[in-house]
Every structure is written in structure tokens, then in C-alpha cells.
Length: 145
Image 1: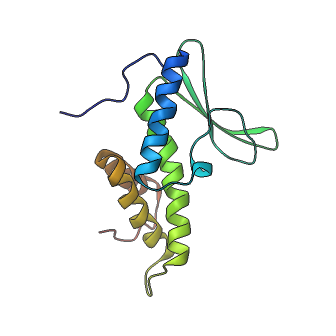
Image 2: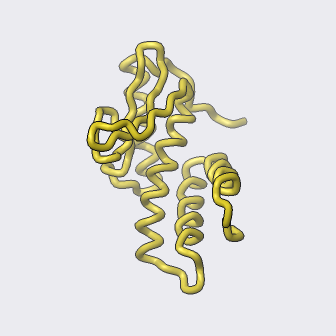
């Protein structure tokens, strides 16, 4: 049986504290730097943050120089966590792939394989979702183990 992270009111202070605690817990599982985790107060410089409407709708926002680059909305805590850790693991994997190049392997493959491993640690379904998204979005996707 799959556990759900969507229990509890998201729009209450308690619900937001539950979300913060889950972000911290999941981040610790993969050794994510605190600065690389989604924030819960507005920030600029293209760093994602979360706001919650009174009706419980989560906004995953990315703002740079006062311009909103992304504003994704959901009422699902799990969806919000996926978006957040997709971004966190992508950044972590990019840093890792830069420090650990694999001769003869496309940099993107090295990055994606590391991201898959990080996502799998958090939730195997998130790894599979990321793989599907890449297959749908990347026209020249090389074979991925």
C-alpha cells in the first residue's frame, strides 16, 4: 500500500509546519543542503518557494528580479513535494555530474542517472515519473539504464 503525504490541512499553520518538516526530513535523506531546499517565504534570484492560499492551494513559485517565472498550483502535498525535490535533486545531480564526469558519456546522462538515484531514495515513484517526463520532453534522449 502506498503511503500518502496528502493527509492533514495544508492551509493551516499546522499543515504548513507538517510540510516544512517533510521537506527537512526528505532533504536529510539525500544530504541536500538547506539552501537547496524549497523555502517557505518569498525569495528572488530564481530560487523556488512555496506559498499557501487560504483555501489550501499550494503555489510553487520561482521569481527572478521581481518577475514570476513559474507559478504552479496544486492542492496535493505530494505533488508539491515532487516539484520541490525534482528541482533540488536536479541541482544536486548537476553539481555531482560536474565533479564526476564519465568518459564517453553525455553529461546529461550522468546528471540524470544521479538524479534518478536521489529521487529513488525519496520515493521510487518519483524516479519513474521523472524518467517518463524526460522521455516525453527530450527529443534526443540517449538510452538510459
